Length: 363
Image (cartoon, rainbow, N blue to C red; front, side, top):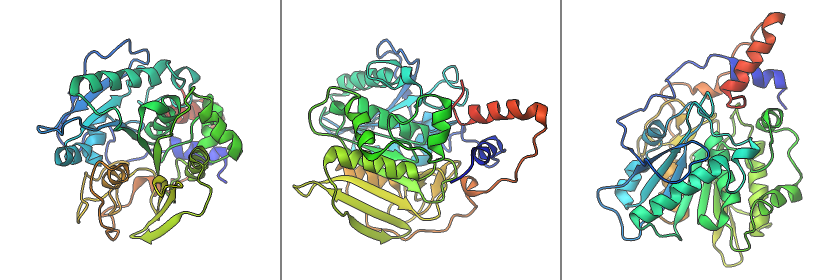
């Protein structure tokens, strides 16, 4: 396990490379100016294709730290797929007033409980978009990267009746951190709650008594920012909720170890994609049969489109054939190991605070 000092060093080190705040292409999103009380003070942005299906599906997308909704859309290719399949997109966007690095506050109790803070704001956005575009309430989905992935887990846990499915990319399990110290600990994969507790955390987040959303989990096995022990914990949490304890169907191809757990009726309810050699970011493909998105900071061209494969898992896009992984033209910043920093005693506190802010763990 990595030491706390190593994690802080990684967070504090200059990252270089493309600016995550910069969109890789034109901003295709429109603002949704009014959608409720908005207690979490979030911005709502939408994408509605020129031609949408009758009673369209809705995909809620949550960006990672330092990113914008438009930048994440351009990198992941969600609006391109929406054009092809006729579904509606809603992007919640964090504001720097809430978090200096625009991370969703996935570790703050006031933002991650039902009908409070950022979680309630996202719920209000969804209600507004459903009403505006006659969305099929049985086909609402949520996905996100990193802090956005952790916030996706929050939404699925606090409003499970709302979603048919979700997808967590490089994220963390619901309810495992309350405050900065625990958040850092969980990011490093340390001191995860026991298996039974993980499921109880979700069950206790609402009064839900019905079917649980299906879940797709994605993680790079070389992620140095969020340890992939978090992906294992998410799988444990949601397999217990779905009651699927048996061996999964497993397929290894193109650098993607893909496992699927099915319920008694044979329906795929939980899946895991573990991408070999990938660091912290969203897996995309920029060429080949499943090309979708644009490579950039935290948008990693590994020849596998998580966007297309997640949509196929949810049943709102056709399945894609396995494509061989392709080498990236440049090294992934998230996989680089920065040189250790020499800290002068008087500056240690300031550097740690800067590191925590960079991780979105200090307001």
